Length: 204
Ligand code: GRF
Image (tube, rainbow, N blue to C red; front, side, top):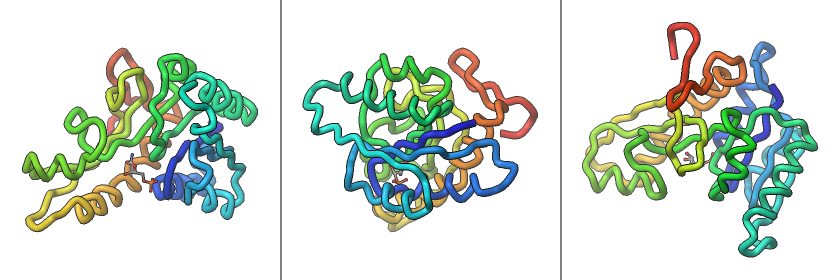
């Protein structure tokens, strides 16, 4: 499967996918990395690794979200992207865009959904006093941070944690589960089945 990765920042999840995709039998090939922020560190990293990259500065579109998304969609089509992976992509997507990629777009969220959708998940986990926290890979649907769950990874919350120490522990788990989730989706092993994900074979 031809995969496009969208980022907004440092791109450590993108790098974990790039590493995994180097395995000869990996079912996904990353064909382009795009960002809504021209200064995203991850874009440089992707270019250094020899990947095609593009930046579409959403600020140049003002309030016209759909014009931004039409151009984004066109870029992805140019590269014949079949599967879209959001890796720290910090733009809300309209129903039109989500619909174009229905069942073919996945995201990673730094919390165990359905707990803590939205921003500042690590602060909120600490405020709530949860003992287990983690990350979720899910198919993207029109509603933010909701959508059929493909994979989750859990970490303990430790005494003395602050948002940064907790974020680092969760990030390590993100780097493990995202490549596996992408592999499952690209190979067709994981697919959307109503509100749930159907996994062929036993393990998830
Ligand atoms: C990750 O924690 C991801 O879950 C969240 O944003 C962060 C992106 O980090 N949505 P990176 O750009 O992949 O390093």
